[in-house]
Amino acid sequence: MDQRFDATERFAEGAQFIAGRLRSGSSGRTQDVVDPATGETVYSYELAGAAEVDAAVDAARQAFAEWGGATPGERSDTLHRFAAALAEDAGDLARAESLNCGKPIKLSEEFDVPGSIDNAAFFAGAARHLEGKAAGEYSPDHTSVIRREPIGVVGSIAPWNYPLQMAAWKVLPAIAAGNTIVLKPAEITPFTSLLFAQAAQRAGLPDGVLNIVSGAGRDAGERLVGHPSVAMTSFTGSTAVGKRVAEIATGTVKRLHLELGGKAPFVVFDDADLEAAVHGAVAGALINTGQDCTAATRAYVQRPLYDAFVRGVADLMATVRLGDPFDPSTDLGPLISHAQRDRVAGFVDRARAYATVVTGGEAPGGELAKGAYYRPTLVAGAAQDSEIVQSELFGPVLVVLPFDSDDEGIALANDTPYGLAASAWSRDVYRTGRATREINAGCVWVNDHIPIISEMPHGGAKASGFGKDMSAYSFEEYTQVKHVMYDNTAVARKDWHRTVFGDRP
Image (cartoon, rainbow, N blue to C red; front, side, top):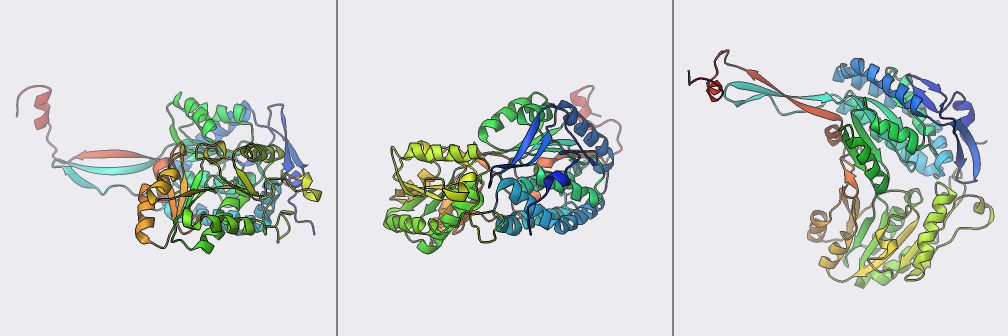
């Protein structure tokens, strides 16, 4: 039985979802969607242009009056039905994600899809808990109340590495708070965003609350960010593109949320459980073929454990099984494209001049040569200021460096422009406590690397951006706080009026 998702049949009407229906783009440009495991085109569609962006924003603007005025309970009920609809579609979502991105089916089925369903269930509950400061008399003559109100139309741009989860992270807190949204997925990975929107419609989300425009960044993306009716922009992607998004957004003074690149350090102190650290490093470096902004990319290992760590990681990487993403035994799928595979290979090939490729460092031959595969790779001996240590690769590559003192290890961990995620490995609670305080990152794991949960926030510092996805903290991004102040005196002439006119009453 062929498990591959039939996008041509499912999205025959087009890859735009506007005001509750699928439609074609009108840009005059066709986009081929390629299966990265085979290099074969599995779907072609016309990209969104300015007309589709404008139509989607208009649909969201019109839907805002109703959805923004719905009660928290009404929004919660819809999101509960949405979570159930996603659960019904779990098989299609997993197959579509694996076809579109090359993810091993076990990753799609056990991580991407259940995580997204859980996000929907979480925000169904969180919709009823938009909290503010308690009403009170902070001035003797007035009662103050804090209102949390939706912002309006949100224009969000999601990346290609986790299309389903990024759709969930962008859409769910926005609509739970009463906003409406136009989401632009990466044009090469539109499938699960479209399925996500169709599930929302089945669940009873009013037409226009969630719209999808599948288009190129230079055209649809920039049009969306700069649109005068869009009140907020949320972007996940590279730091370089994030800077461009920020430039455009400032033109209309929008609320801005940026989740950008990462170069996560993996700090192993000399009292760490070596076996746990080795397994954690391989899993943390290779998840989603390393195409994860929180992936372990820089392992700093205190010198007494360094040699054993390098041997252990190299040996374990050698057991990782590359193969067909739809084979349940496959551990590692291809990168998103041959271009991305070649980019990663370029980093590794240039590093040979100044470091040692301990294992990997090549694309496999045979049948896998048709796809964008690259073997798990460990690089040792690179300098801290080298390209492979400082730059985001987005591939299955781990660089390992030694350190001596705890001071040095933490300093090295902080020595890149990024600050999205990190991990510290030690049996000593004081060591790990110090690491969690002093490593500058939005998330620091202790004796683990990668797990995320709906109740806790995700977001970075420094060049990794600002703002939070998931959790109740995400409402800080998608609501505006309004202070309402009531006079309690019923006195016409207030004492403070004398500072403007007249004398004290």
